[in-house]
Length: 137
Image (cartoon, rainbow, N blue to C red; front, side, top):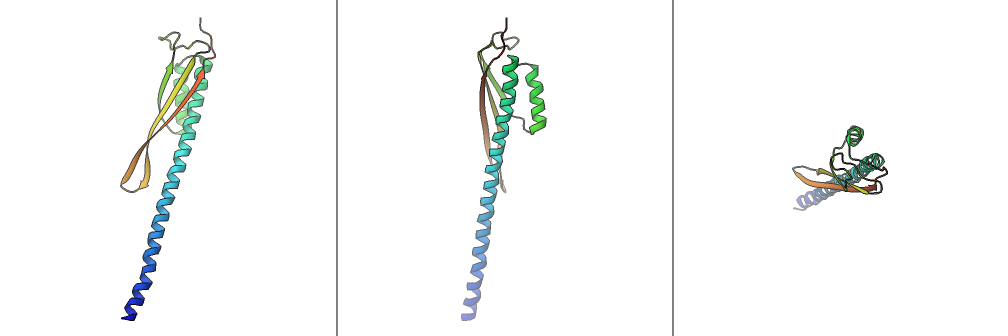
């Protein structure tokens, strides 16, 4: 009987070790996901600043923006949804008068991965604004 208890007592250490390793791995997966979201947020900020610089310099939301967006998608590897908000001087040409505010909102839908069958949806959003630097007659 003492021998059976000794064997069972030794086996309990293995169970504790397996549980500790499992918890450690889950914590590692969580940390990697958080780091990837921080990195993705930084990429989105860069994306929005580049597009905003193009829009404010040109004074319009035009084909230059689309070209720059395609370049950034190829460079960074993300394709967020863009929403522009501005008071247009000419709505047909989407021109913004000098000194008027242009706002850009980027939205990206992704998932919290790494927990097997569970996949938690996450939406990342970033906003950036600037003033038009072009005068339209």
